[in-house]
Image (cartoon, rainbow, N blue to C red; front, side, top):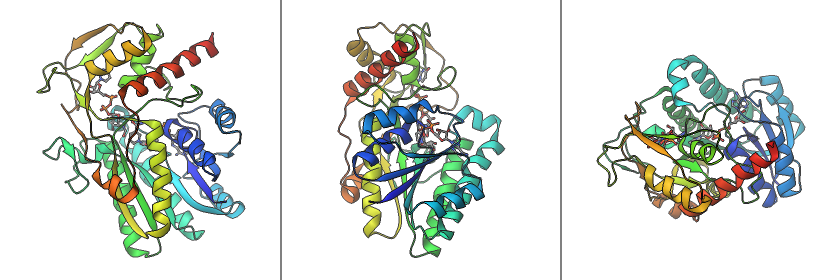
Amino acid sequence: MKTILVTGGVGYIGSHTVVALQENGYKVVILDNLCNSKAITLSNIQKISSQAPIFYQGDIRDRPMLRDIFKNHPIDGVIHFAGLKAVGESQSEPLKYYDNNVVGSITLLEEMIKAKVDTFVFSSSATVYGEPGATQYQEGMPTTPINVYGRTKLMVEEILRDGAKANPGLRVACLRYFNPVGAHLSGLIGENPVGTPNNLMPYIGQIALGILPKLKVFGSDYPTPDGTGLRDYIHVHDLAQGHLLALQYLEDHPGALTVNLGTGKPYSVLEMISAFEKVSGKSIPYDLVERRSGDLAEYYANSDLAKTVLGWEAKHGIERMCEDTWRFYRQLDSAQS
Ligand code: NAD
Ligand code: WQD
C-alpha cells in the first residue's frame, strides 16, 4: 500500500482527493494548518470512505514537523494543495502570499528531497496564463499572470521544473486547474468558504439557501454570446481523479509534466445561474453590474495533453456540477439548523 502526504487535505479540492486516494487503496497522511478549512471535514472524509486519514495540524513552513512526518511515515509521494488562493487578498498582502505559497512550497520540497521522496504533484492554476492572446489555453502558451496569486503559482511551477532538471530522479506534475466546482455525491464535503464568497458557485449556493439576497453579475458587455464572462467549470470529482492518474503517470515518468485540467467547454454566468435554478427549483435573483477588475471575458482549457498522457477526461457536465453543489448546501443548511 502506498502512502501519500496530502498538504491542504482538509480543504475543498484536497478533501475530495483524499477520499479518491483512500477509495483507491492509498494510505493518506494530511498536513493542514486549518487556516481555511474545518476539522469536521476529517470526520466527513471518514464517513465517506470508512477510513480516517492520519492528520497533522501544522504548517508546510514548519521544518521540524515536516521532518517528523517524513521520519514517521513511509511517504511515497506528496500532493501539495496547501496554499492561499484569494486573488484580491494576494494583491493587498503580497508578502503573505509569497511566504505561504512560494516559501512554503520550497520548504516542503527541500524536506521531501532530504527524505528521499521523489514524487510531487502540485496544484497550479489556469491563472498562470494571464492574457496569452487566445481564449483556449494550451500548455505551451506564454505565461504572464496578472496578479500576485497567479505569480506565486507560476514561481512554484518554475522551481519544480528547475528542480526536476537538476535532480534527474525527481518526478513532478503541475496540474493547472480551471474553475473547480461541485461537491461529493454524499453531500458531506464541498466548498464552504469562510465569509462572503468571492467565487460564483458558492455565492449562488448561498443565495439559494437565503443567506445572501442577490447575485451581482460582473459585466454584461463582454464580447461573448450573452455578454457575461465565460469560464471552464470543472467538477471537483473529475479533478480528484486527475491527481490519481498523475501519481500513476509519475511512477513510470521521471521529470516534469505540466498539464491543464479543464473540460474544454466554457459556460457563461447566466448559463450557470439558469442551470442551478433548474436543478434546485430555486430562483437566483441577480443584477447586471460593472465588470469586476482583473476579470477576463473568456478562457477555457485545451485538455488534449491530459487525455493523451494521463488518459484523463472530465466526465461530469454542468447539470451534475449544480446538482452536487446544491445537495452539499442543503445538507450544510440542515446540519446548521
Ligand atoms: P482551500 O483553501 O479549500 O484548501 C487549501 C487548504 O490548505 C486549506 O485547508 C488550508 O487550511 C490549507 N493551508 C493553506 N496554507 C497552509 C499552510 N501554510 N500550511 C498548511 N496548510 C495550509 O483551497 P482549494 O480550493 O481546495 O485549493 C487547493 C489548491 O488548489 C490551492 O493551492 C489553490 O491555490 C489551488 N487552486 C484552486 C482553485 C480553485 O478555484 N479552488 C483553482 C486553481 C488552483
Ligand atoms: C467566475 C465568473 C465572474 C462572482 C477564480 C480565480 C482563479 C481560480 C478560480 C484559483 C466570472 C463571475 C463571480 C460573482 C459574478 N482560482 N462572477 N459574480 O474569477 O474565473 O477564477 O477562481 O486558482 O485564479 O481568479 O472565478 O468564480 O470568481 O468567477 O458575476 O459574485 O463568475 O466575473 O466571469 P474566476 P469566479
